[in-house]
Image 1 (tube, rainbow, N blue to C red):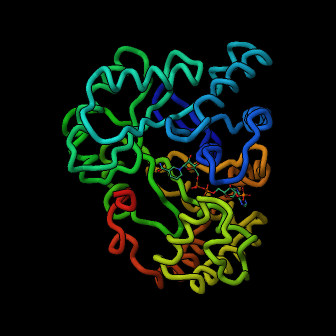
Image 2 (spheres, rainbow, N blue to C red):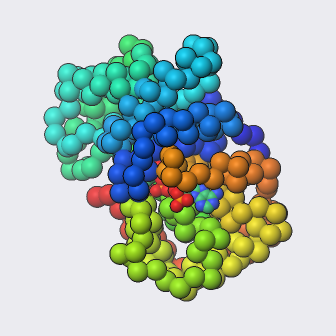
Length: 334
Ligand SMILES: NC(=O)c1ccc[n+]([C@@H]2O[C@H](COP(=O)([O-])OP(=O)(O)OC[C@H]3O[C@@H](n4cnc5c(N)ncnc54)[C@H](OP(=O)(O)O)[C@@H]3O)[C@@H](O)[C@H]2O)c1
């Protein structure tokens, strides 16, 4: 599998993106200096694409400092080989040109750049129709050159359709998508395929639950889980079918990983990367605390076959239907 993919004609990204929610607090203490040094290591190994947000604590400033360091060490040209996909997550309310532009200006300043590669827009409340205004202003800022492309995060298919019908050009929608959470397949994937929109997936490793670390382990107490990510996806496991069924899944994934001489995390990542409309999988990086670069890099060497997929399906068929339980993509936030 190719390591790179085009999200748009002029925006090539690594298909495994480095997720920066993990630097925002509640995932362990992050030392800023160590974090920037670590970012260089990711970049050098070809993990050149970062996923972040205006609400992820110091993430945008980390990008700014990283860009300065990269330029000092490798020269200005090297900056073209790094992509930083941020998000705009405003509180509901009026979305005037000035409000939107001043937020984008803040991101540009923190990230030490004159153009954002991609702005992924999130909206908390569909009953507040101001999200359309925000997207029109973002599109104008794109046309003005402050933003290269406009994307979304956590939008359901119904609103994605409304947005595209308004003539807003969207390149991507970032949603939760994993072996457990196949909700995108019901409505979003077909819509994206028909409208040339790509999916960026998160929650694909369930905060680390989809790994050898939890294979054969008894059910954790939620209070003992030490990252916000694990606590979020523990809830997802419970809603999906519970710990016993999850262990059954881990066992099958372990057998598949042994066949391909890779890790359970690799199988979980490949499973989503092989899906239609998926451009990339975002894997959270606790910069300076833990890293799995070499292991995650193996994903580009493996390909799951139809037997692997049907073995996984034999377990997931026993689970609850998360679309029926939660609703379309992003409903968990509303
Ligand atoms: N748009 C949204 O609403 C939204 C929501 C959530 C996340 N996101 C994005 O997605 C990113 C990913 O976050 P997530 O919460 O979904 O986490 P995740 O990627 O499912 O899990 C990340 C954790 O998985 C573990 N891990 C990574 N590679 C591994 C490997 N090869 N083997 C074993 N364990 C491995 C690490 O745990 P340890 O550090 O403990 O080793 C890491 O911290 C975020 O940073 C953010 O950019 C977006």
